[in-house]
Length: 263
Length: 284
Image (cartoon, rainbow over all chains, first blue to last red; front, side, top):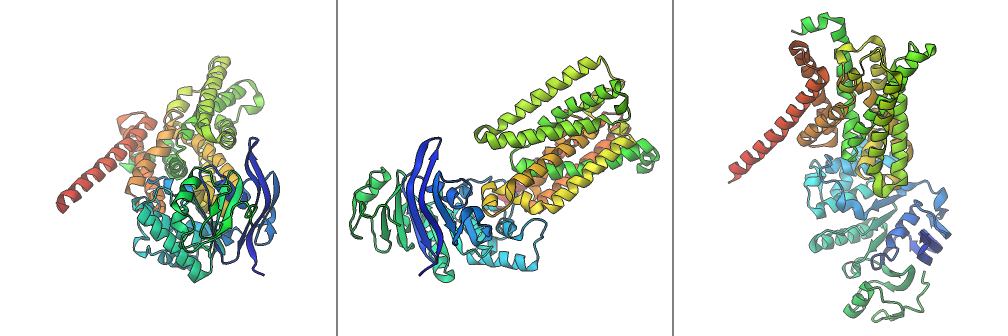
């Protein structure tokens, strides 16, 4: 049986009595590339905060690598790329190399300094995302796509087993976003990384992910193994408006009612 | 020229105090500026006024406190205010900047009330408001050296945590960096540095020394480490040249140091623009 790297069971969560997640179940298997898609306000980013234990569910259990999230300490096994990565302070005077190195600081721990092998690891991560020529540049001087690659390198540098990306291509042009998703696909294939990608743009990722789940109004309403186009344009428009429950997913042939709760 | 300046003991103390503050104020200031919290320096400085006034009041009426340096009371008030700001920012995430007017006005209000209640002090309160580095005594120097050592050790030991928390707080927390403990410690050290700097540039000018060299250094730097180094270097140049100028021209030392800092900032900004336009012209 494949080990689960992230498991959420019957998660309920509310913000000020407003229910956001209603009995959500989610399993990300080792080596899997899973996309969680859904309209704005569907609770996607809340899932990420719960996975990192920065907020607690009202009820339900969350496990990271088989351990309850409250007892999980090996945070360096998880790389994170946030949706805020594209809205950071552009005048921050840090180089690509310094930003990528900061991905190791949590793993190094307090009072320990970067050594030669750590800097070699930083160069390797920068090389993996194709930014070696720009390693000494200030990050604010790079294009949006290059900045996102820098954040991928920062997440990769601690050699994680799982990478969580929360809407990483918001504000990035479509061509750079496409390159970015291809890079994720390559890292997934070559390194066997488990990836959890939060996105609202399902169309852009179906070619690279193994599985897609659709979150709407606090429920997972549909699941599909990715591959050839799963969502037809009509469905996509309905999903964007949040009106997807009960809709048949055509080519995959999965009925949303039967697929809920899914995982 | 320096021989003549160093001939006087008060100038020796002033130079030592100035060099220490020139090192630590921008060191802490860089992390405040990149976190867009530079106004905190101003707010903490104003709270220090109430602490110094409380210290002077105790010195006047309580025999036990007669040999106490009021700067220590200022440090205590400033540290308390720093803890309040950190707590306030945590509780009111949407209106974090509100903490600044709250403690700034509270600090000045309490300070003015305490000064009026004392009905006059033996020392010149204006020295705390505008700085009086030439009047730094041995006790002040000890307080400044202690704050300098603490701030330097803190920044060296926790440089990488402060960097990642300044650049991306959320990612830092998710990677296991203990945000609360580090930011709390940093707030306390900031309070110490601000209070120690008051003797050099004064309550009303301290935020200038914390931010102006950083604003200039950041424009010239190509990395964060370089920004830190250049900010300290420019602050030291400002303090040294400001002190020498104040000595010979008989100007107020705090104001002179800040004016030199502004001059450096203008030169850096102007020079950079000129360099850019020349580079553009060359390309055409």
